[in-house]
Length: 507
Ligand code: NDP
Image 1 (cartoon, rainbow, N blue to C red):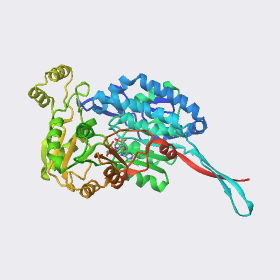
Image 2: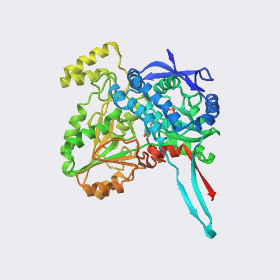
Image 3: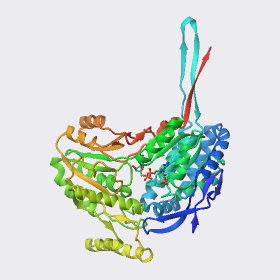
Image 4: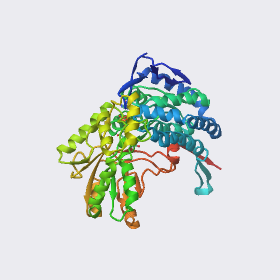
């Protein structure tokens, strides 16, 4: 069985403990590789390697870093197919999504920051003081040192590289930890870093659990900045440890995003996008809209059409090109999502579609009933060689729940949405802003004034108007309230990984 290795000081190495734990494929529930059970000792080695590499790396020119990072981009693009297959197997997402979104975006992250670092400018101020004093103030922007990057399982390589790329491009060296649930593409990336000629110690990847590896990174005295994406509770714990050490912190945390639909919207566009913004990646994207508010005159029409489209989504083998919704990432997360569906029932919600786990058997019946012969035959041929006894949940739509019940306040992070009618603008704004989170919001209206008005009032780091997940890497990305602090993206991330120093030179 494949043993994943840590990447420390430019070498692929075994963990200090010599211990491994199981890496499970979510679609089958089977163990298919082993993850290093690393601990503080491995983090210390990684941090030492990063510290040793820092003086040389931080003084390379942006052009030299560009050359190496662009070699890495070419290698990721060369290996797009094996990386996409690995991501899909490790996470449960449809391979079509990994192929079209996750892996291209990982390459784009490195490409973007390889070039952005060459355009980062510093400020200068000419100063005239009393008595004819004349000085130039200029700002040096210097890489902060060793940075810690910790990422979640939902978009594994996409989010891992979204942190590493700006850190390395800014001249920092890095100790990074992917989620233990989805370590495979980070492991494959470490091999590509060696092939690309990234100097030893510039990037170090330590695999293992959050409590052992993640917390050792956060608490390490030589790690000056922590860039973290994950759940709000973990973010709180990280802030508790890192803040008294005066570390720089970027926290991209949970969400419970509203999707607000006015009756004047472009209906077809809205409907197709809302299916996507609800259930892409099994609803396991921090930007997915999970609370859908629909203006009352449109409510019944939307409900009928939405439920019809959602019921037609194919849940199944992530490997199949026909699959829309793959496997839930882990048994633990699968059980958590199902428990929220139970909670919705207890709170008086009506399940309009979905609401249950999908087994290979129920999926087969569903396809036979729908008469979708193509899918049935694909399913049977795939099932003949693969036992899909992993963790699948039907895309679920729930109505008749108030905006302030627990189902509508807690982050579920799965293929579950609620729909609710509203009558007035102020009313829906109050509903939208009633949660502790504030990551992303989606708004559908053809009324330009209303679009501006509501965008300004939404408590959210990102507002999509008449679109969803239309990303431009130059824009600030992050949340307000309990969705985190700091912004990623654009020059903001390069600023995060650098420290400003003002030099005042009297002339
Ligand atoms: P977690 O917070 O559980 O884990 C995120 C990462 O932190 C993992 O690598 C995890 O390790 C690690 N970790 C866990 N405990 C600690 C600790 N004490 N100290 C340091 N690191 C630790 O989140 P999930 O992986 O479950 O991801 C889902 C969450 O991420 C959702 O809440 C989602 O909203 C959020 N998210 C936010 C995004 C944003 O941009 N705002 C984007 C994507 C997701 P391990 O898993 O190995 O234990």
